[in-house]
Image 1 (cartoon, one colour):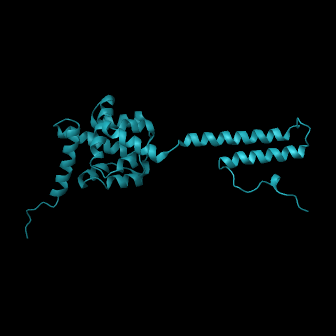
Image 2: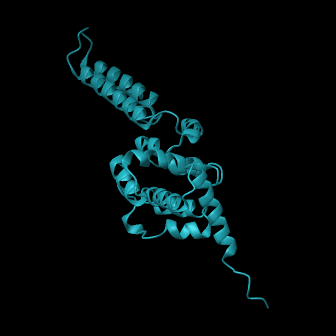
Image 3: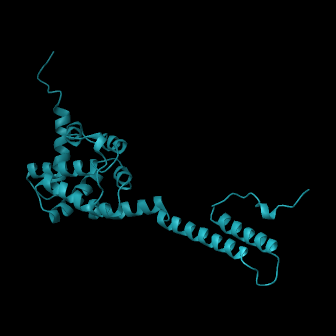
Length: 223
């Protein structure tokens, strides 16, 4: 049996290939610098996503880089703050660069890793992050792909949907309040309340805020 073959050689070779790709993306021959930047990217992204998302992302990494990914990781402490200043602070400190340099470097690493991870992996991870942080992480070449992907996936903004529903609720309440006031056309209070209840129900039904059950005001009276 031969003991000359290094069992770790394939893993080391693959890690070197990824590091070379990152260095090429950064337009540098300094592998130590490329290693620091890649490590900063892995740690700052890892700390801002959930444990499950980290598991999926790390599964795409070569074995040697997976060890770097989980270096000093504390599952109970993630995700940390998603704000841009804290992200840039951590990235700049780990990479040994300025904040301005961190922005350009983060985008460059994203461009490179997008070509190394399986299709759609980074789109899935970045969809979990706030828009301002995504802007920092998205590289120039990756930006168009991610923007189109997120637009197709997310559809209308959740805030727009909430705003629309709040407007519908306000309108329904206003209709009910008017129905309880003295009718201007001389109609009875009972008829005004029935009409108001019917109108409010139609408003809420149009926005999916109530079921299609006929409101009590619309039901025939039985003895």
